[in-house]
Length: 181
Image (cartoon, rainbow, N blue to C red; front, side):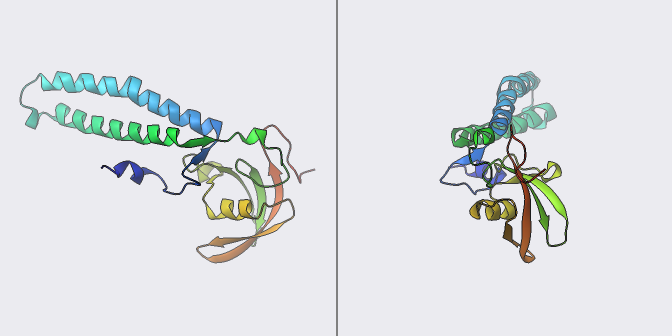
């Protein structure tokens, strides 16, 4: 059994499901569709052409094409499994908007008086460059476990030790922020 598909993503999931937003689900589905409907047929065509050129052992187009097909198939299998096990949660439908749950955008201040804003998303959607943190990240785990509200001070376990942060605002898509004036 080939477990290489699992190496591409965090193994952490809650209850065997991978939580993601509708946007994250759509992005993974679009990537899989692009691979299978556009890229794979193009590479198959190149490999077929290269195979017709004779000696395959020294044919760079053939060798590269076969390698690329394996990569495409591996990624497509991973995406298919991930989509099958996805638990799509729409943060806009969150009814308790005064607490931190999956999909919340949270503004907080840390012990160094640095203000930050993060959005809690699925592991496949995390991107710190745009302030999206994984549901399994230390900060998200701390905020969700504490069911944090505006004004709460929440301890976060980091590699440097336990640090405190104060929640300044909580926002969900389609609503104003709780805590902001």
